[in-house]
Picture 1 (tube, protein in one colour):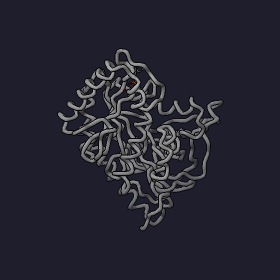
Picture 2 (cartoon, protein in one colour):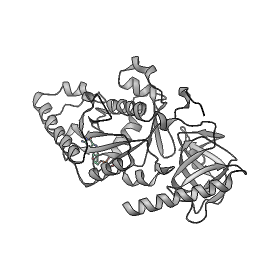
Picture 3 (tube, rainbow, N blue to C red):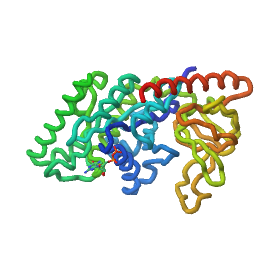
Picture 4 (tube, helix red, strand yellow):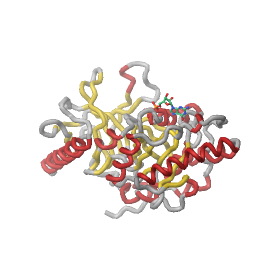
Length: 357
Ligand code: GDP
């Protein structure tokens, strides 16, 4: 297959990891909420189980509008479920579902057991990642500058505060070194293949978040181009985030579609506890941006969806579907092969998540 045009690079999928209470949820909330609060229409799209930050808004936020044409991915898709369990249990074709990761560390607390665990997992999966040193607003004497870039706010702090930040920062560099990674502040990294970029941020004030999004885009461009080629018109392929009972719909599955297009009426093969389920897509549902008025208006019914996207599938017989398993569209010609492959992939996920805990 010959794909050279940019339209065929899909949105990279990003997972946030790190120790409990270091700010994973707050960071995701901030990414979701800040654009809405700032009244930037179209800056983010809420998916089922994920949030997409659009490329234009990332570039605008970071003040680098001159670089617009340098980017070839449509944006970044953040999985709403943080943590390394989500990272390891969500797979695509044997690899991790997430293309990129953010490891969050409380700058005042430093490395903790789950920080190290996250790094080991990322090393094993060879997933490109950045580290964010969170809660810089907690540094004594910090003057917050809502949503500012890190360097802008850093340069406005007193010398004492800057020194304090630098000291805590270099402890993280030391810890990363002990875990086998060379790292540096993101703006001093010239080769992201050899050095991990660290971005000081505050998930509460939004400081440093424009830089984080820009660095993630840079990583995606540099390391993922080959992973992000996909076949937009090919059969849909995704991973189950959650199996969920919905009023009036019965059991549904929330998935991240990472390849192809899925259409209403498609025959799908769904990984389950027993034999893979064979069923037909009854409805494809996205969150209704105007919704939440009543249960019926919670979702918007669409005819088809193209990767990468988070979507809810309503279909018969989904009761035994398993989160972490694969969903694939099939045709009468290839359904037997696909059933076999879905089963194999499921065995792989169960073995590897079973052994890592
Ligand atoms: P998680 O367990 O990693 O998801 O951590 P949370 O996002 O739940 O954050 C734990 C606590 O730290 C909460 O009380 C947050 O409000 C707080 N927190 C998270 N990020 C920041 C930050 O940047 N600055 C400050 N001051 N507090 C933060």
